[in-house]
Length: 242
Ligand code: G3P
Ligand code: CA
Image (cartoon, rainbow, N blue to C red; front, top):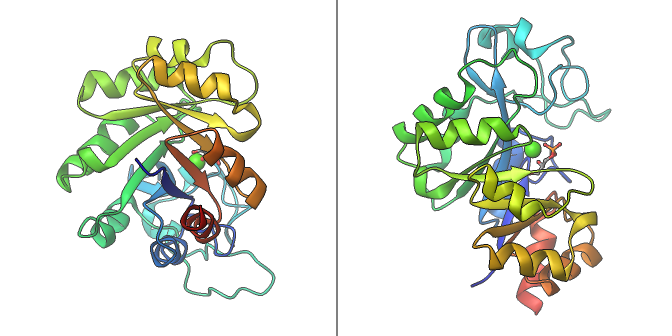
């Protein structure tokens, strides 16, 4: 089966990350799916943004959790000096699903729940996935391993992916221990042995963030089931040429 190409925060190598602009660009570049980061606003709405503060990616500042959705919608989600995307906003998960649930697009929803200020994030995300009938096309991932167990408790049919950074001993066993279906492996940790062992344990293996042509070739040569990349167009071109 062809490896799946997921656009990391959308086509974020070329467009402002985690924006509708970036997600539409990923679809135009024939990504199979998009990866996006979700957390809660002050009024407990699911908003799509990576950092816990607004400062790096938007014209706002301070913690995301301090603002209501309405307030978050006022900031521009493009801080580049050129500001080429003056209309770029922080999307809601609902808005993303509304736009793409009618297409075959897949989703990796990363829960940004390392801080304790994200109560019920798992419940709210699962509720939204079910509302749009997207369970089969969606993976919930997180670096918070306990949260993976919570997701399975809420919906055993929900596919989950364990995310980690740096060296982790026998990560496929850690993933199994937390009932994850997938292992999302940082590019610098990908190896033939790891891919083989992970698959032997019945898990799906994805590499992140696989950006340069060389990294994309390497990950594909290793036989990963999918890659998460800021450059879905580049990955698609390389896969087609093989
Ligand atoms: O899905 C992999 C990747 O998104 C995890 O790291 O920091 O880009 O959210 P980060
Ligand atoms: Ca992410």
